[in-house]
Structures are given as C-alpha cells and as structure tokens.
Length: 607
Ligand code: F6R
Image 1 (cartoon, helix red, strand yellow):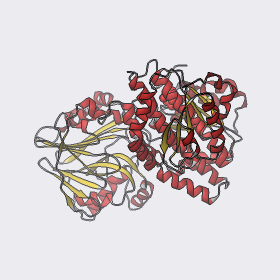
Image 2 (image 1 turned 90 degrees about the vertical axis):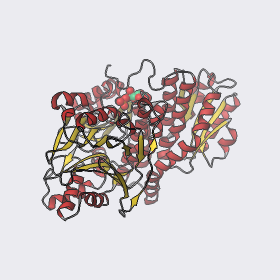
Image 3 (image 1 turned 120 degrees about the vertical axis):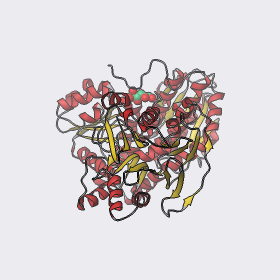
Image 4 (image 1 turned 180 degrees about the vertical axis):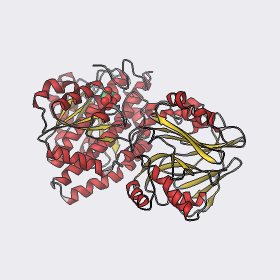
C-alpha cells in the first residue's frame, strides 16, 4: 500500500498542497516520499528515502512551484526504500512522471521489452516501466491521454497511477485497477488521490474512479473514460461528510475494523508474491538438513500453520520455534546446513532479530518474510519476501496474519511441486483455492459480521473463553485466543482439541463458552468427539464451521458458518475472520479501545 496524490490548480502553487495531502496519506506508507511538478516547461522531481518530514527538512518538497503536480508516499514492494526507488518515476527524457500504488505483475517482461529497444532504467521498481511505456507510446505519435490509456491496457496486476507530461502541461491523467483512486472536484482546481483525506481540506466533492477507468484532470474539468474502449463516462460527484479523522479510517470506527475489512485486497496482494522469490526460498529449504521457522506472537501462529502445511503437503520437516526460545533451545543444532525462515510483520522485533543473528553467526541461511521492506529483518535475510499488506495501524495484527499465512501456503505449494510430492489434482485444488480466497473473505465479511457481533454481545459477561482446533486449525484457535486476550484482557485459553482432555477439561462448567474451529477437513471426524466431551460437561459450544457442516452444526449452541469446501491448508486465512471480529466486538462492548490495547506496542524492540 502506498499513497498517491495529484493536483491541478487554476492559480497558486502545488508544493504545499501536495505536501499536506501526503501527510494525510502517511498512514498508507512512509518509507520514502516524492513530488513532481511541471515548472518552466519541464518536470522537476524531488524525492528521497525517509518519512515526509525528514525529506521536507532536507529537500523542501513543499517549496515545489507550478500549478500541476503529483506526489507519493511509499510502502516498498519492489525494490528496497532508496532515493532511486522513491516515486515519482520518469521516462528516459524526463517528459513523463508517474506515481503508483499497487503491483504491476508483468513488469519484468515489459522491462525486458523496453530495454531491448533502448530504454534505460534508474530504479528496481515495477512502476518505472509504466513511465517508459508511455514514453514509447508518445514516440509513436499518440497524445498524452491516449499514450496512458494504451499503456494501461498492457498492464496486469493492481494499480492506481497518476501521470504528468511536460508535452501537455495542463493535465493529470489517472487510471486505476484494484487499487483505490478518488477524484476531488474543487472551485480552485481538481485533485485525485488514493483516499479522500488527501484533499478534504480543499474540497468535499468527490468522485470514485471505478475498476479500469481513467480520469483526465485539468484545472477546470474532470473527464472520465473507460480504459479498454476510451468511451467517455459521466458520474456526478458526491458530498463527503466525514471529518478527516473518520476519513482516515474510511468511515470505520477503528483502524482494526478497517484492516479486517481490507483483507480481500491484502490477501490478494500477498498472493502476488513473485514466483522467483518462492522458488529461491523453496530451493534453500529443499537443500537444507534442518529448517526452523522463527517468529513471535501472531507471526508465530502463521509459522505453526506453515509447519503443518510443509509437513503434510511438501513432506518436509520444519520446526516452528518461538523466537525468544530459539538460541537457548536449538542454537546447538544450527550450522551451515540449517535454514531459518523468520517471519515478522515489522521486521524489527528484537527477539526475532536476536534469533536470526544467532543463527547467522552459526552459519545458517536466513530467509525472511516481513511487511516492511528495508526493515532489519529484510537486511539480515539472504532472501526475503515482502507481505505487501501496507501499514497496519491497529496494534493487533489482522491483515498481516492472513497475508503471512497466504505467502507461507504458496511457499509450501512451491516446495511440494519442487519435490514432486503433490498430485496434480491437489495442486489444482489449491491453485483454485488461492484464486477464490479474496471472494471467500469478502463473502464472509459482508454477510456474517452482524451475526458475529450479536454473539460477542451475548457472551460479553463471560470471564474466560476457550478456543479449540485440530490440524491446521490449531494455529487458527491460538490466534483467535491471542486476539481476544490482548484486546479484552480476558484470560482466554487455546489448545489442540485432542489435548484438551489432558487438563483443560477440568475448567469446564455449566455455560463455559468453548469456541471450536472446525472446518470440514481431514481431522473433522476426530474433532466431533471433542465437541461431545465439552457438551457433556455443560459447555456452550460456539461452532466456527463450514456452511455445509452437519454434525457439529447440530451440536453447537451458536454457529458461525464459512464458505464451503475451502482447502484445509487455506482455512486459517478464512476461519480467523470471525475470531478477529469476535475479539473486536468483545473489546468494543467492554468499552476498550481495540486499536490501542494496554501495555502493548506494535513493534516490540526490547527483550
Ligand atoms: C498480536 C501481535 C503481536 C505480534 C508480535 C510479533 O496481535 O501483533 O503478537 O505478532 O509482537 O510482531 P512482528 O510480526 O512484527 O515480529
């Protein structure tokens, strides 16, 4: 996730307006920042690595003059945070500048094609190809608008793009697919940005750009077109009645709820991980004699799910270890035949970094998965993958968990294929599952949220909850417990369901709520027995189950149903949603702020 902004004014100067809009978009990314404006016939670019105010202090981006400009605040996906990789990107002649939010999937092919005809690239981003594509189209005689439209028709992936061109210095051209883009229509000029807060201080009239649409903004007009046909579209602006504060949360009362609802997109973005990186990681794991998965908290739960997948799908033994225990417990086993795969949203968790450094010192190969490109973890890793989730503002991890599990599931599949241990039919089932995931998530969130809220409110007075699951769902149960515990301060419990009778069962008394995470997977028949054991002791069973479930549905006091036939490997990505919502609504019901649970920090940088 990055933030883009564009401004076309009747009079005045864009620098301070762009600066202000980027400050409002900082929640979308803050590792690099840049602005470009048309000035004196040419394009002037100011950009660098760093937060907006840091770059302002050194480059004075708000001093940029001119009536037309674009700006960008970055959350790195392709290419580490650096001056070269910061946006805006320009073509060879410096006549076209572009800012981008999203991921261009076919950028490598396009880059090879453009390099073959002489284009020179300055960055390692996926975005730069678009500036060169437009340049190529201009060279062939197209006007600016047509050059952008034709370039957009060649892109695959997700993008919100805004361009300026010194050959037609009166307009901004913007285009979108999947990534958001909103137009603001004002009396003193027109605006476009990733999100409404960017221009809310200038105008309250907005138009949403829909999928595969293009906007041409001049100081006096906004025109919309379809990207494929070029046909003009008309759409009236609507009045935004949100405050800036509400607009930052896109209307949700808390960042956590907003981030829960972002998951169709964040999972889709995670699944865009380029196969090359999966291949590099799969090869390293395949060569290793010992493989450890290291992480803390939620990221550790993602590792638990991954360990199950690596073993069942790829037939590879991996040991998931809580990072703070790694060196003391396993350090003696680590050598140059060892691979450690460390997973950390922030990439800065000190326990994870210490374990990684300890492993590196002993000669291990380090693989990293992190949401923050350029973080210490990515710098320590021999190979790393970015999660592409965008910044997570809520302290409790939600969208970054489902992104981690998605990437790890893809890695397990890549490994299974490499080792030739997976039948074609199973591989196809999973591939289809990856494609369906965003829809499964949207369907659940749009149809079941109120139901989950009602259950949370009904059980608000309970002083403890237990979460049970088997197989893949052990990780889901543990993560559901962590969400409830950290947001509601309740001493919640989670177990592998089979283990519950070895102690936990003594806690159960009449009315004690037990949440069973029970998809219809290969361990389904075993968990039915565990449900019966709890019911026999008076537990209130809350079944988190498949829509087509039979037996557990009958045994449950409350049911939360999920889309049918989700491949078991992918169930944590969907079955965690009701548990995230449940934790959120219990916290809100108790009057706690779910975005800022007490005693917790987003990034734990002390031992
Ligand atoms: C829980 C949560 C924490 C983090 C943990 C590791 O909601 O967010 O448990 O998962 O502190 O953080 P990262 O993934 O940044 O290493």
